[in-house]
Length: 33
Image (cartoon, rainbow, N blue to C red; front, side, top):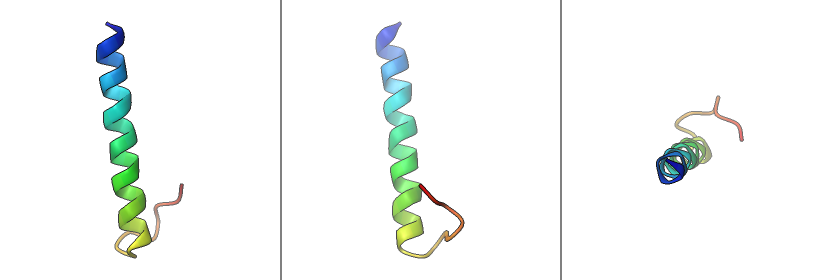
């Protein structure tokens, strides 16, 4: 069960990173971290 939660947390972190990178490139200026 812990591994499943850990995987979900990693996916969430990766999604936040992708959004942050997109924001840095100016494609999505509304994203702030």
